[in-house]
Image (cartoon, rainbow, N blue to C red):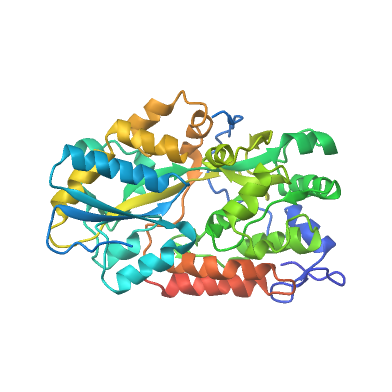
Length: 447
């Protein structure tokens, strides 16, 4: 474990640990919390990332089985328009059927869906990033009753595998996204950085130069919006994981080290934006990067579509995620789902709509409008020459996923979303924060 060496800039963080320049440098040297790499993925595969192109209120179903409700998250400003247009096309092709669309901001969707579940006002179709807790509680319809074998067999195997609970598939893979380091080429040239960092130590050195030039060195979003993604990247890049041998290991020594490092970035090296523990990803990190104010962020494969939407002219590059402790290259594979709740009499209409959505033209139009990667093989083939998608499709084989097939994960995720950012308050015991998430994981049932 880290040891105190002097009066700390960051204060005590874990079991008496003191975060100061010396202890933070020790983390990036790979000599703290053990140096033997716990490789999160890749199997020796190289990571080849290319430059991405910049040119690039709900009625309740009660009497009619031909009327279904759809609830989904707002990925972009055009998400609602897409689903309403698709519903219109579906209704025109299937007279007598009706789809009521409700799109919710991702900052609010967890709370609103939780209320729906608690009050048993289940949507017929839900777009979410989780499913196993509801499957464990017997609330969901299995996929094989909802889509044709042609659709069911078209999913990329890794995404399909990540959609099962106790031998049955309950989640329909909707979208995928990957993560990589985005860096501002103009800022790098201005401060004399020749190449993007490949290690934590190099990232710190680069971020310091960028900060000294008047920019944010690294944009760190640990606010409640998708902070499990940012956390997973740093955890995995240091050789940690959510689980070890099928047991939850959120508060492992290696993971405590990773969270200490994020505190080092904010409180000792001081290379992040202000209040990273309360900063959300989209507006707090992606947008400042698109505006040319930030040197580096962990970007997503859908970020270019946001940059275009914001009329950004940022000159950026994409590189592999910097690693520590000799960890091999990897990426985070984020997968969102469509699920169907067991509302009486809704199976036929739900099935018709889902099969309609996964028709290649309809599905590809969703992906290109929202900027996400496909989860089906036919859509992957259709998009393989698209410059906005091609650089990321090659990352999917080395992707790591959240443990979303475990019903306890929603509890762990919810606690992490609420608590992780508090670890960056100077003087906070970082291990105690991870202990809270570990407790939620081991005691939660994901309901």
